[in-house]
Image (cartoon, rainbow, N blue to C red; front, side, top):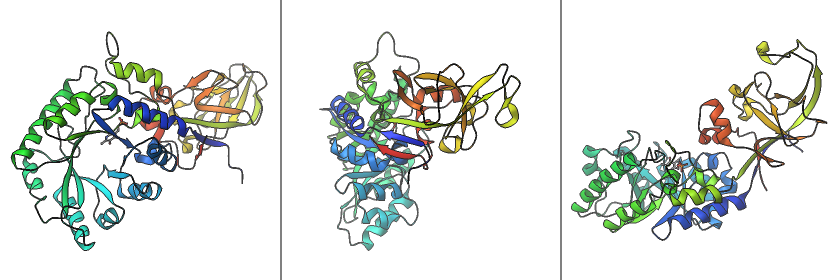
Length: 395
Ligand SMILES: *Cc1c(COP(=O)(O)O)cnc(C)c1O
């Protein structure tokens, strides 16, 4: 059955090319883990996880065990890192699906260890990436918790310390001082780990902002000092957007960012169609609460997409969409399932015309940044708020 006309097109080829380009930036110092959490930033895990593997990704990063189970079904060979950790009762599914947990709480190790023992796992056969809190105060072991956690990776336990992980929380700050401090703190933790006679294969650090700011070498150098390999975890850049840095880099971009700005390709286009066209007289109000009142006769187009599809309600009266290659202002508040645009100045708009919410039409482009700038958020949120009911189609 043909669906209601509100859909997302995913260019998996662009996703693959973005991965290869970013892997090239990291090489030869570091390997990449493709972040495909939250249904691949709303781009469809089912489309993007296999594309990442096809482009050479050996590691995928998801939020939860349930996302990990879905990724495992799609990609039987990939390493799948569960960056949000396990929750009580999820250990068995983690083990059965060969998922690798990020862990930072003793109870998480209990959960995994018991499930591993129940499954008859051999000593040292269940890899864990231990997260270190280097300043974000979110996930991660603090200084006091480190030694007790390390003691859990004793000989005979099924648990193996495979990775040491931290999250850089200000890699999009152009001066890099916060990141430097985080890496310095991580260095101390790695010294403590080796002082205790322990070692991990992977140093798991760095998002898109770190990679494009040219931090891969510093991360890889830190890893090398401790005999480890560096694993960076880009998300947003895989989907074709470079993070905005604050303040903007001066006088010129770091080399990786400069190339990224020319090479990264947006992966997602979000589209709907005109479902009706009507003319209204001066004085007519449009939409809920009459926030828009026509001061002259107008032609309006009704669109089959609303806030339940992920269009932020605050865009009403403050944003434009592309119709026939021209910008059509959103008129009135966005409704749950519908939106109205002003097409008075766009000739011959008719039902069935394609409308672009994100993407390019006849040389005009709307990006997730454009949405985010108006609603005071970030492209990550714009992407992940495109509703599940919006069909994702590979193109
Ligand atoms: C989401 C996430 C990333 C990817 O971040 P981007 O800014 O999208 O590159 C990396 N690491 C962790 C822990 C994350 O949660």
